[in-house]
Structure formats: structure tokens, C-alpha cells
Length: 375
Image 1 (cartoon, rainbow, N blue to C red):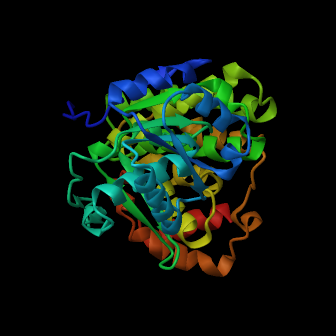
Image 2: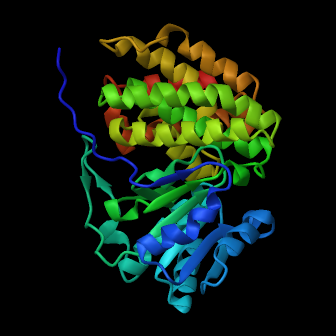
Image 3: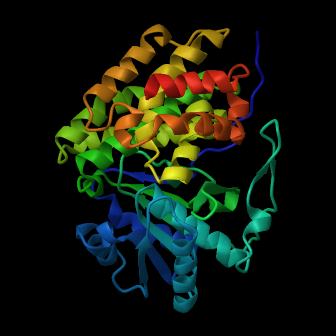
């Protein structure tokens, strides 16, 4: 059977390799950025990474906003937008993990929208259809410098911030949010500790796996996901155990990039829907629940595929084995999730837009069973 498909997103500019941070000035010139705001968190700001970024920007009027927080809470995004306005920034450079990249994207949303982001936030229909106002042409350009093992936001047009009061993630998706370029320099990734490397890396693994069983999977997304998964299975344990291993860091960066393009074109589903709930309600890093939920989700969803995934029968066991060698909690209860909360988590996940991309309809009872298997 021939299944027609479209490739809706592909990275347009990636600079990969040790020492590629030196390409940052040329990339900014290509994007027409003269006065960048560097967006990062306190860990990046207090270590060698920001110093290297500033050295690469020497001679260019640049300012720094170092207020990034996990899951990009709205107050930190608003403070970043204020910093960009004070500097009269004409572009953004994010340095860090997914929260830094998402914060920079959300800063661009607030500035382009004049502070009223609501019309541009995604409102999902029951079938996963999106409704939102496109961002205007003057949205600030953005160069991303990822430093962890698994965001992929550097090559994706989506972003989100955490509405702490409502306990939810507010999501955006617009071609103008996709960074103009991504600098993948493994020399910058060596500063991520083992826990951060493992958690962010398992988020990339989750994107690869979910792209394989998505109802919208297609040959290109499958090829990207399989290669990304191969690189991550090889590189992630080594990167966590030996942080200075540049080859392992490079495997993780490339595997992550492939996971993002695969999932952006095929979409993720059950595990990511649950990850949104855990992130919004508990502030839990996405990779922690992703790592625990992948094996039970695979066992539930792989039998629904008309065409088997290569190596699919052993994939759940392989993912469980990968978690077993990483410094992450093995069970949801070890991450502080009460058993009494599981029904509410399942119910919330059923309302997430990504549930529209499971290979077959999934019931709330099945979602609860997946949670129970991981608890």
C-alpha cells in the first residue's frame, strides 16, 4: 500500500562539530543580527559556556539575560522580553538546554505580539488540529546553541512556557519560531552532568520511539527516528559515564537533532502527552517520566501497527535496558509521584492534543495501566 505524505519541517542551517561555536558571528550576520541578546540560565552563566559565547561575540554589542528557569515559567519569559527591549535587541542567541531555547522563542513571541501572546497560542481541536494566529514578519531571528543531550528545540518550530498558576504548558508553533541556525558543538556539551545528560537524552529517545509508532509515521520520519535511536543508544550511556568523550557527545547531539525532525514530521503521542502533565503539574524534567513510560507504552502500542517496526519486538526491552544503565529514577514513585494522583494524570493526558497521534484510539483505562506499570 502506498501512503502519501508531506515533509513539513526540515532544518535549514546546522553547524556541527568541535569548535563550531566560532561560526556564530557569521551565522548572526546571515540572519541580519547586530545586537543580540544571549538567553541562558544561571548554570551556563556561571560556568565556561557563557564566557565562550561572549568571546565568540567579541566586538558585537551583546547583552545577557541569565534568568532562564526549568520549563520556562511565564515570569522568566516576561523578564527576558523586558531585557531584550531594554537592549533594543534585533535577534536572540540561546545557550543551554530546552528551557533556554524555549525561553528565547517565547521572548520572541511576546515581543512580536506586543505582550499579548494569547492569540498566538495553540488551541487544539479534538482531532489534534491546530488553531492560532501566525506570528508577524518582524519576529526576532534566533540562533540556538544547545548544550545538553536532548531538546531538539533548536531545529523545531514549536515552543512553550509553563503557566505555573494553572499547572499547564502553553504551546506555540510557528515557522518564525524555528531558529535560523543551530550550532551543535560537542565541546560545549561536556559541561552537562550525568543526571542532566541522561534526562535530556531520554527525551530525545522518546521522540525517536514515538515517531516510530505515530499514526502519521512515514518513511522519512522512520529512517530519521531509527538512526537517531541508534546514535542515542550508543552515545548516551557513554556521555553520562564519561562526560569528556566528544564522540559520545556528538552522537547524542546528532541523535537528538534527528529525533526532533522525525517527531516534528510524524508527531509524538502518549508518552509526550503524559510528559506535558508531569511537567505542568510537578515541574518534573520531561526525560524522567519519558524514560519510565516508554517501555509500557511500546508494549501497548506496537501491536497496533500494520507494518512492524524494525526490531520492534525487542525495542521495549532495549529501552528498559537503556534506562537501567542511566542515573535516573526507575519508577514514578521514586520521582515523588503519589499513586493516588495517577487517575487524575491519566484523565489530564487524555485531553492533550498529542493523544490524537496514537496508532489506534487509546482509552483512559489503558493510559492508567501504562502509568501503573511505570509506578
